[in-house]
Image 1: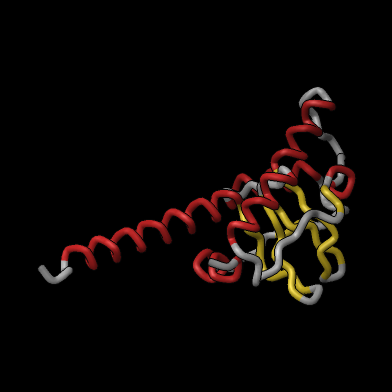
Image 2: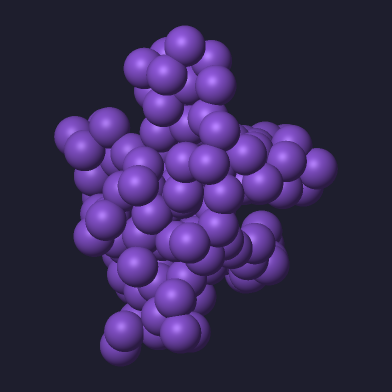
Length: 144
């Protein structure tokens, strides 16, 4: 299975923030949309990723107060990315090795979507369930 297949099932709805946006507003957006990450866009181009990890780290280092802290101050610049043709096993390995829970999917400099570790787990589980059902059907209908 390839990353583009996971994106196709998941959909490619993107929610973004701007580097100049306030971190507090990013938290509000993430909570409202039930997201663990936001793509940081500037002039139509991805410039970084903001995940709950960076937000928690910022909260911890500032005594629980973000004040006027900007997204651009805490975002991950140049995040690890995936290609649509990448195999899911390679994607899982990349996520584990880099520690990234969310990977932007890029093709020719264009952002296609974001894949989360949860998206990968769900896709693999669904693929395994399908294969299991097919194999059981094949065995059940095997000529005696």
